[in-house]
Length: 104
Image 1 (cartoon, rainbow, N blue to C red):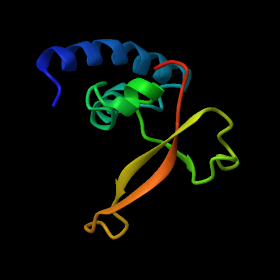
Image 2 (cartoon, rainbow, N blue to C red):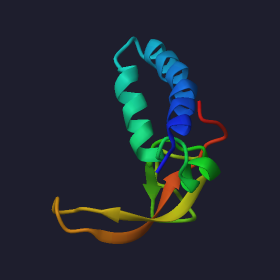
Image 3 (cartoon, rainbow, N blue to C red):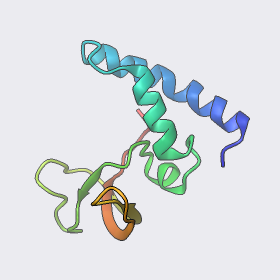
Image 4 (spheres, one colour):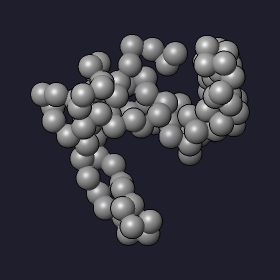
């Protein structure tokens, strides 16, 4: 669990990025929603996956290490995750997720 200091630090870091992205997309992206989702998916920036891959959102890229689907051409990381295909039963899987050079 993230400390109050980690929470405040993460939100202070991610808020201007979310606001900048909203402007780039004609304010069709709500910064508050992006910030909240980034907090949830990265454990306020404390998850190992987020730190290593600079990925605040767990966006999958496909199951092949050789080709990450048709849209994503960047780096990826392989990790375990929990999926809920029927909305209630947890299934543990391994998949590839996008990795980035920076949080922005």
